[in-house]
Image (cartoon, rainbow, N blue to C red; front, side, top):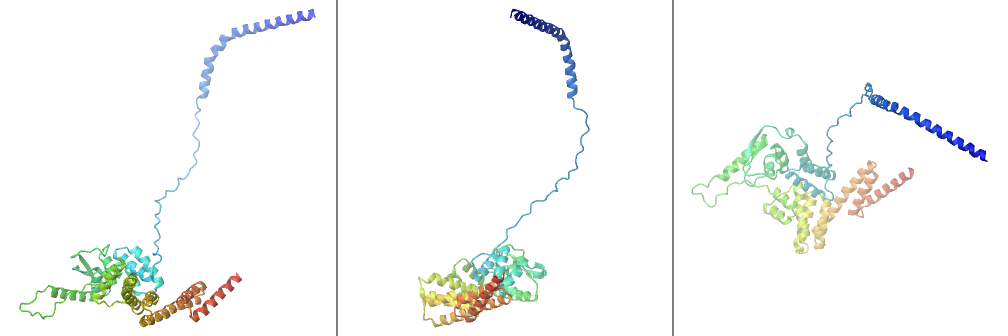
Length: 388
């Protein structure tokens, strides 16, 4: 055991001598290593310098196509919902009087879908859509707008139709036909008809301006005067719900309405009848009867006549005239829808036919042909659905 301890001590001494020898050698090499640091730093700097490498080939990328400004999507105009045909036609006239031809055209097309043979509506739509050089000749003469004159009255005098006011406005580049001033210059297309009307207008104006001759008697006939067209006033009053004013204007001027005008006047009587029903039932009954008569006999709108005639009978059940007109209106209105159903059935439009015959039966529940044809159409529709 003593020998082992002696040996271990001897080995420890030997290891200590080796470590001392290594440290001595490292101390002698340290100055050499310190001299190498600048050289190594220079080499590192050279290695970090980027090499001169040719730029990579750039892929040819086509630029994105230039896009123009975004297209402006205009809203699609729609006809006013929930209007009766007569109200839609009146609305279109009011819009044209304000220069709003876009909305008026939409309303007129919707009106013609219900009343396809309406000449006034077709005339108004033509004035909106026809190029002006095709509507009237370029050759013209100029007049000055007189007191109480409107484009409607001028159209009635020169063109023979008061509804020609919008075409005349376009011809004169007038944006709003309702905004005119006395003395404003208006161009009139030169035609034999307008020249004759111009001569008559001049004669009337001259007669109106001529002072009475000295010594003229009090019984001398009155001078001719230019008659103001009452219909713009009547239409405006109806559009604003001033039904009584419209009626007074029509009765004072003793108007003789055409088909379109009769519908406007009938709307005035019907509206006033509803307003007066509680306050003055007898007058309301009279005006309701007048409205039904105008719708049925003058405007050829039997279905529109039903409501005022029913009101007249509700106020005065013993009114034989109202009873007779209501029976006639029912027969005509039911027949219109019945024939529409037959036409739809012939085109194999079963849904259209059934809908038309439903309207027929709503007016006249005892209409035998409508009952039978509707039943056949429903049965045929059911059989076709089973085959699918």
